[in-house]
Image (cartoon, rainbow, N blue to C red; front, side, top):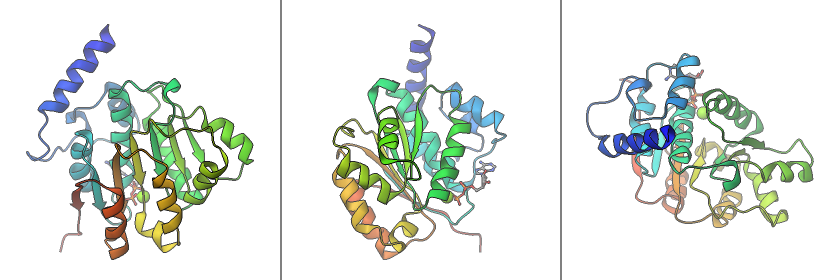
Length: 236
Ligand code: ADP
Ligand code: MG
């Protein structure tokens, strides 16, 4: 009962929240769950970085995002906070399967994202996992069945989609492409296209990149729907 009331007032707060009004400085001023707010506070995240100020409000409202900001600007929380919030508001449970897929260029970067997710997701009850190889395909596949939030590398994910026929992405709510410029530089364009072809079209997509290149723009055209462009430049 308490949870239902909280969810209702959260939905209301998100509806009334206007991303075009004055930028939000504090995580505590965002319309987010007390679970996420508490974990952010415990991890000593208080104020939003510029890219977080621009991207999080729009993503919380359900928009697709094409975000560009240099390395070190805080892009990880810019997508992880919305991922947790959207799944929570859709009442995602461990039984609902994969709700969010986060694609990262390398094992190292995927592992870093996963570590941040574990920290800021610790008050939630979602199951999350890494799909980056390094374990047997069968073992990883069995774990994949139980994951709500998957952090993966492109090659390994496609291997599962090709060989693990019984993992369903039909319910997928969110796709995150992190470091999209680097994914493309590494030659994963066809792999990405094949992965995206396996995903439902009615999803929210958040694409982040350190640089804005023509290749990233091409990818955005094919994977995003009327995206909000969010670019943060260094002060001149
Ligand atoms: P990017 O992906 O843009 O390169 P990261 O998400 O890896 O950036 O963040 C870079 C660093 O900034 C990390 O050490 C992270 O903990 C820190 N950071 C991110 N957001 C905040 C914030 N709102 N307040 C303080 N530190 C932050
Ligand atoms: Mg990053």
